Length: 218
Image 1 (cartoon, rainbow, N blue to C red):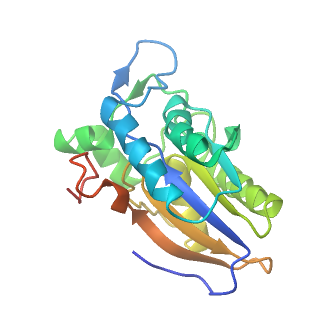
Image 2 (image 1 turned 90 degrees about the vertical axis):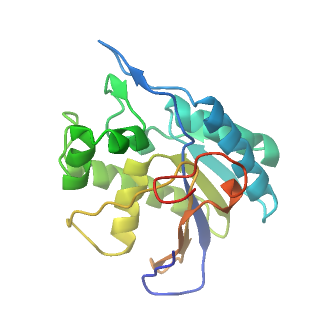
């Protein structure tokens, strides 16, 4: 899928990557923070191989949550990069005591899936506006630090959504982009402030692998 704000000469090529498929984890107390599943680790390896066939990466950032760090690890190994952990791109529900993959929620028609579609906000740590502000601010700061370079940020669906909405000028409108696990979302940026979305939900690296891709792709 391609969409754009105003096109221009790219100054930074930004790759926003959703983490791989994690395990389901539900606790009575404490943050769930699940690890990647077996399929998730395989997805991450295919992702790293796919990216390694392209141009080099100059920097690799990741959310500090386990599923993001573990997805970034094969990329770091392939490119010989250190993973820079960035707390500001952690998921909005990072302190939740449960994590259920979205596909399981949809398959069961779970009320949490319906709430997600309605855009209902359940975080007590920050408002949707505060969350979007921290996400956009963090990503823009990364862009500013890497002029003329190509960088990747491994994070979460809830993080990528507001940044894409920001680039598309959706403002405070409710927007929900369903993002596949290990999907790549490319944004070309310019020093003038222009941002152009090049791809959304890019998952060519999972085609033919037999691994899960997403709700609408097999």
